Image (cartoon, rainbow, N blue to C red; front, side):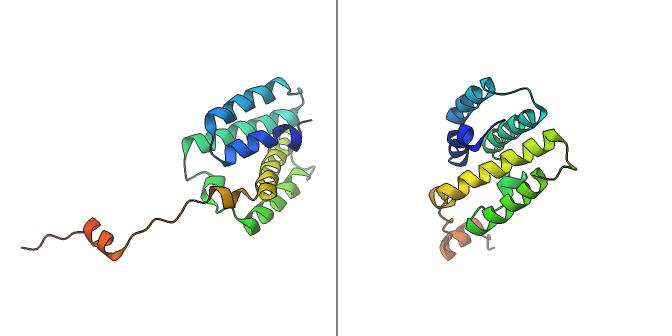
Length: 136
């Protein structure tokens, strides 16, 4: 079964948007994969995390949410609850466990502090230039 320790480097590379390095690390992990359905679900989640960062698509759940100290804990708690629920298939539990492990890595390293982008500065003058109205 895949572990957080096995994927810790990958999670950090994903969170810091180092996509080429993350893809290389993902290839290494694929060679260690067992053939269980849970591990396959875990792997698909890892692939999805890499693709999410690579695409930059803001419509994808983990791209939309603001990952800070409180939200990371809450979202991780939800993923863990579903991952431990035996009503879900083994594949789904592996998938959800991977997402929970990713959020654990984000939480442990406080990656929201390292990856925070400074807010855009739009002064009143800049806004006027952007919305310039032609006067007759």
